[in-house]
Amino acid sequence: MDPLLPRLGLALAIGLLVGLERGWRERDAPDRSRTAGIRTYGIAGLVGGLLAALGEAVGSMAILAVGFVTFTAVFAGFKLREATHDEDFSVTGVIAGMAVFALGALAVAGDYVAAAAGGTALAAILASREVLHGLLRRLTWAELRSALVLAAMTVIVLPVLPDRTIDPWGGVNPHEIWVFTVLIAAISFAGYVMSRLFGETRGVLVSALAGAVVSSTAVILVLARMARGCQGIEPLAGAAALAAMVSVLRVGAVVGAVRPSVVVHAGLPIAAAALVLAAAGALLVRGGGPLPMQPAARNPFDLAPLLGFAALLAVVSTASAVLSGVLDESGLLITSAVSGTFDVDVAVLSSLRLVEQGVAPASAARAVLLALVANAVGRLFLAAVSGPVRFLLPLAAATVVAALAGAAVHLLLPPIPLPA
Image (cartoon, rainbow, N blue to C red; front, side, top):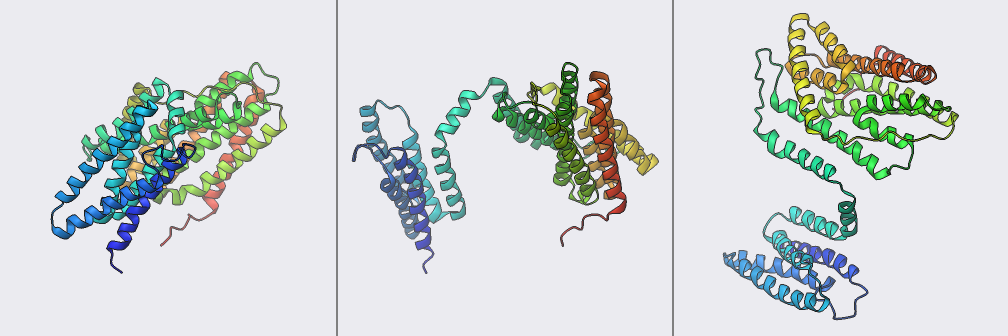
């Protein structure tokens, strides 16, 4: 079969897909009252493909350029008449027609996979008008700024940072440190978005689960303070156990994304601890009454804490490199335990970075597990200081059992086999 035919078919399909969305949106309009529908957009994609094929055949893509300009002028002229009649100032239809023509040409003369993906994305964006407009109405300036900061961190700052160590001990790689900072910021923003989607009326449980993605320590601190003035404390302790479970799973996800070789050794203990915390949290929540008010999730993109995280990660990474060189594995464990008490993300990421410097994945896994234990101890300390004993005891029991389960699995079960 001539390869031109399926490419022309794809050009037509792209136009029909976009035309389906456009035609459905205007399906109640009287016949012949609209400039373009499913047939017109389908033909526009096909014409783009035909002109691209013709340009390739005669060896001059000027035919395509002239055809694109002519099509845009004719299409925009008819759209102008329609807009004047309807008093409509939207240019979306014209831009969509131009995009369909260009994607049809790309399907024939360029990357047909990219053309197919572009056509699908175009139709999806057009169909999401209500969703996107609703999102804009709900979006606050702080949230927009957070998204822009994340984009700037990723596409502006990250590419210019040197991807090499800059200290004598080989601990500080600015590019890697910023990658980890962006990763934690993205996870935090996802948790914030989740809490916004669920709304403020869903209770402590949803907010604690979403807020734990940002900071389980902060969530447990708020729950402990709430428990001081509540009669039914068991649901609050259960929500705290579930928040700790989310924190443990989040660490497991980071380890799996950054160093799969480490999750081989740490994955099963993390899963066992998370399972125990989930079971304990569910029992406590079901055994108590309705949950009262909820802790508010914070916006994760205050720039100062992000920069502080990066600086702390650089300091801990340097200390880990120095101690691991002097004390071998014991230095890594000491650093992980101390830093994990204050910030488990810093401890985990600094431990994972040392794998590239020759530390065995099994040793890094032990450091990760020790950081989780140290962070759990820190959370219990805050719960003891801020909340009543009746809140602390069930949370402490769940934490101890989870730690014992993780330790037993780590000592008794073999590592997860990697696929060949």
